[in-house]
Each structure stands twice: as C-alpha cells, then as structure tokens.
Image (cartoon, rainbow, N blue to C red; front, top):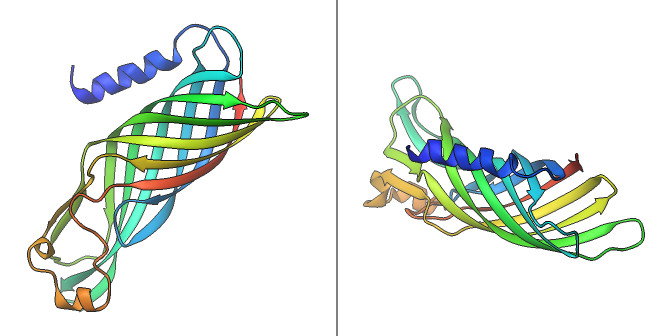
Length: 212
C-alpha cells in the first residue's frame, strides 16, 4: 500500500469508528506558504470525540481538506511581451488526519473550548497560475507536512464557531530556481525575494460548524 492510499484509509477509519456525534466545519483560511504574498483559501473538516464519557476534557480525531494559497512576484520572458514582472500564484491542496485535545468551560448559553493538537498533511494537489514565458527555474513543495495547531471554539447548542492558528513543523518550499545560487539584482533591489528553500507554512482559519 502506497503512502497516499494509506492516508486515505486512515481518514476513513477515523470517521467510521464507534457511533458518536460528528462535527462538520467549513472555514476560510489565510496562509503563509513561504512566498512573498499570502492568500486566502477554504477548508472542510469532519471530526468526532473518541472519549467514552462526557466531561470538560475531550479528545477529537478528524479528517480535513485544507486549501493553502500564496504568490511570488517573478520575472517572465516571452517573445511577445519581453521581460515582465508578474505574480506566480500557487494553490496547494492537502488531506489531513488530525487529533486534538480540548478543555471546555461551560457558561450560560454557550461553551468556550480551548484546544491544541497535531495533524499529518498529505499534499494531493499543487497548481500554479502564472504568465506565459520562460523564467529562472521552478518553485515547488514537499509532499507531506506535520503541523501543530492552537484554537478556540464557541458552541451554541448544535452550532459552533471555530478559530485556529496552524504552524508547519517541517521544511516545505523547494527552491529549484537559478536565484537559489545567483539572486537577480533587480529582485533584490525591489525587495521581492520573499522565499527561501526550506521555508515552512503557517496560517489562520475561521469557520462555522454543526454537530450531527
């Protein structure tokens, strides 16, 4: 079984466990993917509590799809337009298995919950939107990552608000450009050299969820 198939099997096993309430969360993200500009994206998560007895402490496991986006100004050379400076925009698609430990603080009418956890992310897609023309090599990303998370949910009966900060723990940006050896003077002067080989990712996300 290859790595991709193994991660999918783990994701299905996390959700299809013993019967318990399922939380579904839809979020918007704002990610720093190690490039000059950050961009927004979306995320969708399905999770459940695996502790048998209810209480202030919970242990949740889940499956998440996360979209992370960013942009890097680069020089492109074409026969029609000559040398132009424009954005190369990347969209990264990840499937994550996640585990979180949380503490609830019940109040009148709502329940705040602080949580932290880790996730293992598998990159299932990487697309670039950039002008036509030659440039000085490619930028890419590693296939897997491990992330740490710190977040807050506020529950109102079946509904809840979720906010989270995520920090990647492993090197992600793969710099295959000529600039890795010989940085272009124009880029340095304009302050556009916003990425380095091995940069990590991070980001915020906020969303709304419902318990089923």
